[in-house]
Length: 392
Image (cartoon, rainbow, N blue to C red; front, side):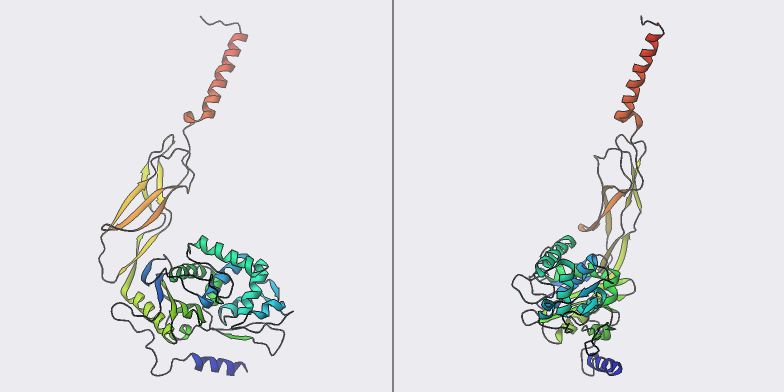
């Protein structure tokens, strides 16, 4: 049985003759069918290309990227989830969970992200938050914390709702956070998986709906989506060397969703080069601090990497901006300024500067020092008086 399932999966996902030239390098600017699309660097979040990046769109099942992220932030993979009747009424794609059935959080996450199971989404949402409404609040709070400020979700699966929307830019931001989580990065890159079910006739063998995992070199995720209202949607990610790119495609049509993502990824890998302009923990300044017992050494908190057009020779300059109102003591790791990077007159980004070590306050500038001095003076005067000395 397993052999036939894997054989059917292989034949289904095989591109076949006359299909799209997967992995081909596009000439010039990319052309896509999608209404909205974004190509972004997964490490830095830098947007390399975009079409209508802030247009509010229905996300369909790409919603489940954020659903999975909220779940792994609040539940252990080994936790057991008992299915209730409400979970089985989700509609749409499903693995046909049965009331009373018990599965692990991990197995439900695989069903959620590979088979796009809406019943798994409902079971996980209820397990984590108690209800769809409360889980939606977690989704929106998490999106806002990530910087996805133009996103509002009302359910965990992506079923159509006028108040359930996001943007291509926000989905790229959410995908970056998901790929940074080791568990989710592993799951979304999985082609096939077997989950544990009590019923031997139940769906156990899962096949990832993301065809790019078979067709695109270096593909590592992330999630497909489709409803009539949303059209074809895809959040795709691929890794080559140390570079990982994310392509978000919303409102595409039919098989064009795959070629849209392919063209964007090819364009990103072929047309841009990633350069580290500033390493992490680089000492950039030594300066005195008011009341400080020693100079402050400012270092970069993180590295800074930027994607430039292939063959481009940027003229990068740095501008140091230290906080001139710092007073000791300064804690190690405290932010003390920024390093601003420019290409000619265009700002590329900023890196926080932090104190390399603690800068203590000079003893004579501290209140306790003068308290000790005053106490000492009073004590000496009392001793002098007791011995009968008089001041003249």
